[in-house]
Amino acid sequence: MFKTIGKKKKFEEVLDQIRHLLITKKLKVGQKLPNEIELSESMGISRSSLREAFTILSMLGIIEGKSGEGTIIKQANPENLKGIMSLVAVSRGLDTNELLEVRVTLEMAAAGYAAKRRTEQNLREINNILIEMDHHYVNQDEEAEVHSDFLFHQAIVKASQNRMLVMLIEVISDLLGEQIRATRNELATSREVLKRFQEEHWAIYEAIKEQDSVRANQLMSSHLERAQAELRYGK
Image 1 (cartoon, one colour):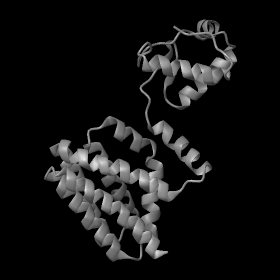
Image 2 (cartoon, one colour; image 1 turned 45 degrees about the horizontal axis):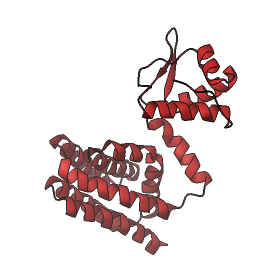
Image 3 (tube, rainbow, N blue to C red; image 1 turned 180 degrees about the vertical axis):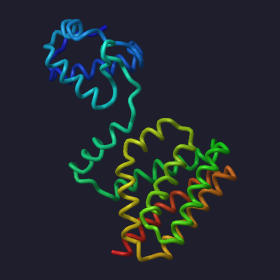
Image 4 (spheres, rainbow, N blue to C red; image 1 turned 60 degrees about the vertical axis):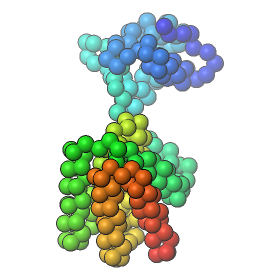
């Protein structure tokens, strides 16, 4: 099943092979890998190179070493990638406008799908978040407003019932959370603007509730683009 390692860095080849075996379903979640000696010999690499690859895979949450059981393939959690994604974005000079363009693309789609696929539980969750946000607005609890805003957008993605969308948003959720925080902090003194944002949130919810996917899609797009415009105007 495993091949001899070629000219790439040893640990990169190990990562590539395990990824390929997972994609082709020759390795499955819960499956135990061969022991360290067998695996290093079959790949033709040193045990130290194998351990280096395993350290990275463990950090990503793809494998787990269990005492007495060996190394097991896990169902990777996007949570493990959030910090890495943030570091990569920052190190490459994160452009907030580009991040917003990604948000518009993903969240427009999510709102449209949510309108078609939402469950009653999804609606209750979104409704409860918005009621809490109304309460936080009245009390001018800015930190709670930021958190509720983030949860609102996450809940709509969840309601899309699209696991790939959910995963993509989870991977960049730290970046999205920071953007929401930065936007609301910039506009903290403009309570009327934040009130309008909340009215837009309720309108998006109503479109999803009425299963109007076109309107939900359009409202999400205009909501995010207006937030960007308010920031530019404020500057």
